[in-house]
Length: 194
Image (cartoon, rainbow, N blue to C red):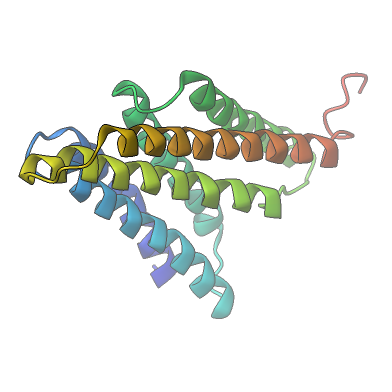
């Protein structure tokens, strides 16, 4: 097994570790969860670059890499939603797009067409991961470090929450845009009259 695939497997294995760190109530648990998510996100960037640079692209990697990304992001978003740190509409827009694109890939694969990851899809993934990391940084300061006596005015927390909410809405908008670009690009393959 090549290095990019090992990194992808490592990312999958980090998902339960992220969830565990998120929910275990020890001092600094949000910070620990953030570190796990950041490391997992870095493996996402590194495995792709290694695979392309050294021509280590495999069918296993093509299958597992996007799946690992989805599982990581959905796990993180689910944790944030469960703890009321994420708007349910944002969550549903992102999840619905993931299901729609996966279904589209299945349909066109049956016709011999491969749906590669496009720029819009990569952009929405990067922005969504950045929004999750920003939220985890906020939770680290608001919950973890506040427990150690860090005094921050309530207005700072309120403004930060609005900014984070805006980041997630932008991520949702990019997600919808990405989904629409896929539908437009492959509309002939999903024509209801065929």
